[in-house]
Length: 235
Image (cartoon, rainbow, N blue to C red):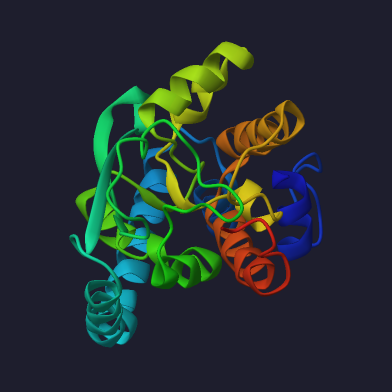
């Protein structure tokens, strides 16, 4: 992936020797270098914060109140829903969402399904449009999540998935994201088969080893396209 992206930007691949000057070499190292590089992590964090604060000012400031009012008018309960999930290095954190279901005891162990009676009318729209994930902007600002990364799962579900797929928890080598490579490819909503679970894992694991800023931007764009064209499993 790094070679493909470098080739698109600079016209040659990393295997070719002596094709960039010192300034270009530093730029490549930051954008495509090893994932342990502090400069690469810093650039990702700066991007996360810039994207989050832009969203706060131009989207959250007016959209949050509207969604909050609709949720309160539609059903009893709080506006927000929080759930323990695994973050980077398997550290637990509370992931925030808009509440899309009536209060129930199965939220942590049972996925939403087609025609799920727990989902409210407003919740159905929020889930279909993925607007229920918008409060995770605050998780990004707090440092628990990134804009792009493997989607975090509820802890009990994560433990069950880890029984099915070897090395499943390797997804947690990076921060979880509001969207990820799997979601940009149309994998959203209920995980209904081993094939789908394994496909998501493969995409997440690929991202863990290959992430970079330009890859993140591409995933964000692809996610936006996917939201408009592949929303049949978002319920």
